[in-house]
Length: 115
Image (cartoon, rainbow, N blue to C red):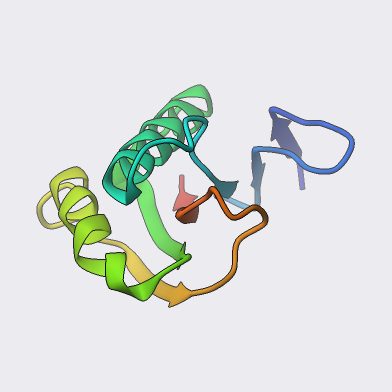
């Protein structure tokens, strides 16, 4: 089985393609001054770019995991998510409240897409 890695560093790759799937690493916002909606938008844009680099788009996402630093921001994150997800192509999804790697992050999203 061929494995392709995109955006690889010493610790991790941003996207790995293997076995007919593309695994998008947990993405966080670059601009941590943004509120949860702004961070979510920025993360989803990053996911779009990563998928595009592998020849995919968000319609191919089959699963997403979302971590929120504060469950009270669930509705704000969902407004952005719902506007981004293509009608009729919503993936399986989990969303949990969790401490993130750094306190300035309000949301992190990882995804799996199928070829």
